[in-house]
Amino acid sequence: MTKQPSADEAAMLYGNRFLTEDAPDRDFPATGMSALDAMRLVDEELAVEGDPNRNLATFVTTWMEPEAQRLISENLYRNFIDHAEYPISAEIEQRCIRMLADLFHAPGETTGARTQGSSEAIMLGALSLKWKWKQRREAQSKPVEKPNLVFGGDVHVVWEKFCRYFDVEPRIVPLQEGKYVIGPNDVEPLVDENTIGVAAVLGTTFTGHADDIVGINDLLLSIKKERELDVPLHVDGASGGFVWPFLYPDSEWDFRLEQVRSINVSGHKFGLVYPGVGWLVFRETADLADDLVFYENYLGKKDATFTLNFSTGASMVLAQYYNFVRYGRQGYAYVMEAMQKNARALAERLEECGDFELIGADKEQLPLVAFKLVEGKNYDEFDLSWQLSAERGWMLPAYTLPPNAEKEKVLRALVKETLSREQVDRLAGDIATACSTLEKKGGAHPAERKRVKTGTGY
Ligand SMILES: *Cc1c(COP(=O)(O)O)cnc(C)c1O
Image (tube, rainbow, N blue to C red; front, side, top):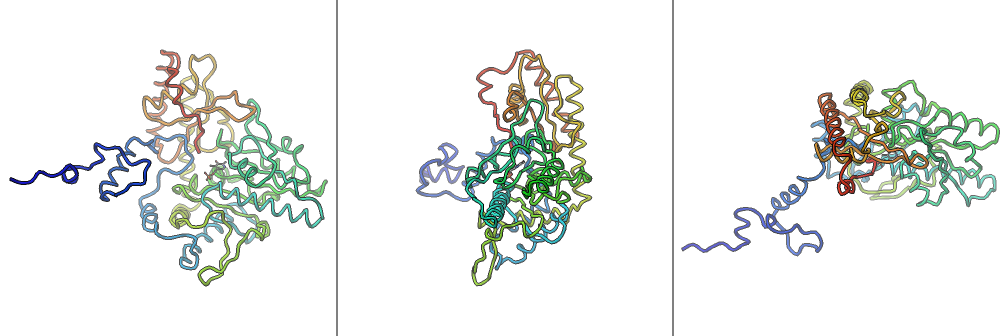
């Protein structure tokens, strides 16, 4: 008679132990499992993960071409920071920075940095503002204890984070009902000799609009002339930096404006690269405070670094360069226009059904639809977000705007490359269906409401 296999042996023969056991989630596992089992364990967990193709909340890239994907997977083992060993990757980073400086109309040779995303780029850019301000003050023998930074309530959370982490007073212009961006009249009363800079947004996460960057630039120019205060302007183009140059090329927001000294942009948003790459570009080399650059002798070679992180993969830098040479200006314009056309198609469908009001669709905007319910409904935006997710799995975020516009509830759909016209039609139909379900039952069940995700999604 043949010997019966033990429980472990049977699991190995016919399946895997984790079919009937909990996944390790607390104690560091005493023993491991086969590579195949480990892969299946993780894969099975992800089966009920959110589907990026139905994620209308994120600005971040969810699809790249197979050729780009190949480059990425072939270079995962390359540590980007090892400039001495991987000088080609470092050179490719520099090419990307030069191309972005060109796209953003830098007047001459300049400098910048690859970062993990716009957050790191903003931290570095704002640190440079702080250091340059300190230098100016010290040159005039003036105190440097009370730096402040001026921005609107329409910024990303990273700006307040910077202020707290690096001890700078945030001077925040509150929003108002019906006014979701800021302009020179908001900024003027907040600027003084301790202002290290003003941050303006190109493409807010809330409604996709831009601050009045031309107006703020003009204001700062007149302050420079009349009060002899040179207050630099940083543009947070995390999303808009790859949209405006192609959809609104004649609209001035970049280094064409004199006080714009630095710009950040997320390569992994409309730069069309997977998560893990952002960029900081200075107007000219002198706008980067030299004290922030570390020169080190690393593995026998002199190297300069200006980063908060150190080791990271080279893949996303290579993928960014791939996109630049693959698409060029014409290709990026084509992709941006396609997204915009589909966003407009969705906006039209939503307007036609009579249940919604669009937010600022007549202004320069990211390729998205920001909208809210018309008054007098027996359900609200949060109910709709929940219902649509329950019925069709679409992740359409509902959120309230920042102070003092927090009474406004907004829904926002990003229209990206993967949302074809066919998908737009389906989405519009699904939204209409969710509305009629809610109309009949009068809002979502309170227990259902609790599960609504209220973050805006980035
Ligand atoms: C997404 C975003 C950020 C943060 O960028 P990451 O690349 O996610 O770090 C900052 N500002 C704005 C306006 C954004 O949209």
